[in-house]
Image 1: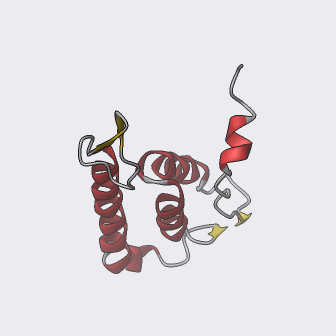
Image 2: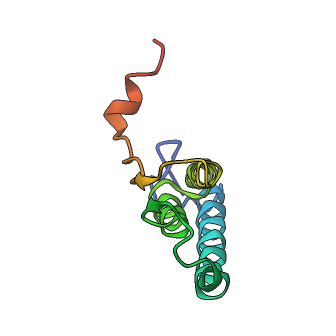
Length: 107
């Protein structure tokens, strides 16, 4: 649908399925993390040095930031988690607002 020659403002634009693909990819990643939590995580109880655990961190990061950026946050966290780190409380970074993002745009 068009309104004055422009696309209608809807959450998921049917003419470009990018939002639908991102949603599907996010759900697949969250499902894979949940399968890990229900099966393999049982054998690694207490192995994570951070709070929240790495799988809980990954779930929260993907849910808040989406599949790509949340996946990168989760991968970075997994690389930091090991016997050589001190650990501790490490929350997921908050989502930046639209106004904070516009500050970095060159004009």
